[in-house]
Length: 185
Image (cartoon, rainbow, N blue to C red; front, side):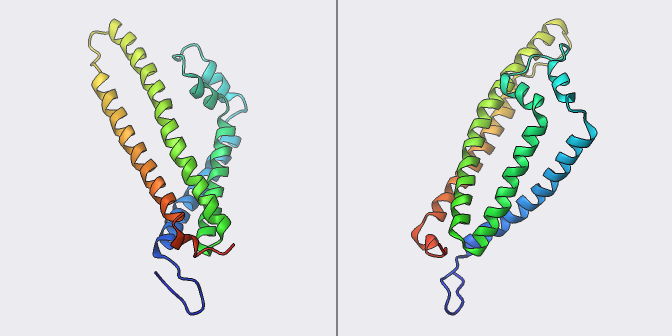
């Protein structure tokens, strides 16, 4: 632990997590701002709704369809979440308890969104498999992609579980009594 005279001890863990997430979320904030500018200036309001309702595209699962139809809202929500990560990271670095609690909440949200993303991706993969099966029935030269989709699913499962475990470990460390003691109320 780093310690300055007259101050509560400061753990390297909290400082490292704060700086790492501040750097990542600051970059994400820049990208989110640019993405929102692009969505609002380059695409007409109903462009994504038209894409989602195009009968030439395969039917999308409900959440995918909603996300495409509400692309601007989704991008704005991602931007707000990124701003919250920046604020929480600064709160961690300043050792403000509300920053620690916000950061814990964002890590819990990250766990839920990673696990929820697996369900969403599973629906998408099943939809894609059905679409590819229909195409394969009409085109004999198209290769079988089932094994490839299984590989993508297994890889995605591993990544999602790894991030969920990382976020859970960070939460566990941030609620430890020695870390809680670092934070001003």
